Image (cartoon, rainbow, N blue to C red; front, side, top):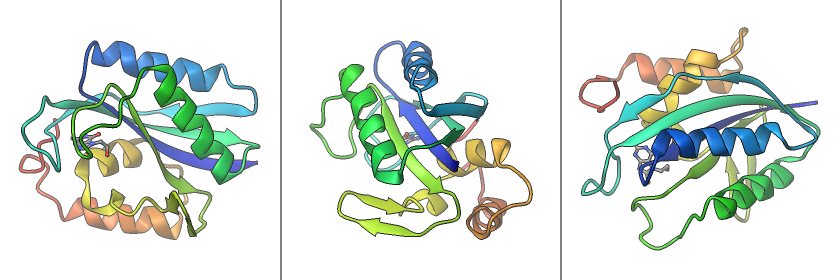
Length: 158
Ligand SMILES: Nc1nc2nc(S)n(CCO)c2c(=O)[nH]1
């Protein structure tokens, strides 16, 4: 069984409904067991600043799927909710990112785990650490270290 941490973000439409829809699609997927879901965080946009604020959550899954299969499932859910990939850092109806896959390091085309930008993003680290299981993996220890040194108000997470 694989342990996978995801980050989900949305800043278009009915944002809470988008999160619920994505979580329900994961819940309904045979081979995926949702073990934890974080609180919903309102977060200031990072990257492209001229866009609405996001809602972000993190989930812990247990799954029989491989990392690549998980990536495909995340992309299917984004497509199902109508994700349009136009402006790279722009507004999106839903965005599912794989943060951690067990305590593995993965670097293949289209998939890098741990997520390459997760350690610098409070909107990822705060929900993640809310649900992270003890004892922390080395990746989660680093996440905790990084978020401890962040000014969360400045990072725009409430
Ligand atoms: N606060 C916040 N800013 C973001 N910028 C991008 S791109 N995204 C999409 C995820 O990479 C987000 C996000 O989910 N939350």
